[in-house]
Image (cartoon, rainbow, N blue to C red; front, side, top):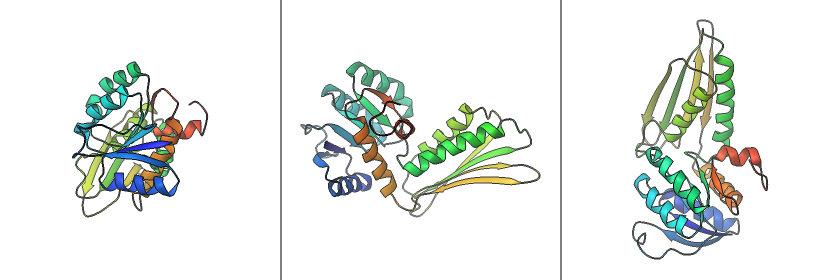
Length: 228
């Protein structure tokens, strides 16, 4: 598998490091200084760039029928157009606000808890996320995905959502349910960014040879070599 890295910040560098350690060939890197030039041919690209670059990136990759894993966040308003573009090109895309295997399993647990709590009117709900001070989008893409999952599971009452940006916090997401008698909290804490990069490489291997638009939970549900 030939891998193209789009965006060469902290996540891009970590993806490259782990890819090389796993024996994956890195075909090249695309960053702000060479984005308008020729891009190396690859089987799949992993994009950890910036939100405003995603439409340009997907357009370039669609033109060469290159599969892509998108870990960049903050571009949800462009998603419908990007889905159409990928569909017309017939490429495979895995897009997720968080590629950590742990946080995606956490999302499945949160959805199930919300489904059970939907029938318990005595419980209110909240969602809090904390990230490093340099993270721009708040709430985070992961928090918004968790919120969507709770809604889709049938929890239609108010869910208070809040954010913290401070220091170097890699990422903490808390979903809580509270009644007059007790409190339930589900928490995912990232120790470092390696989980995000490893999950992106799992998704990159899986999407090669597939067509369609998928989430990381689709990848985990399907498993290697199976359709979701």
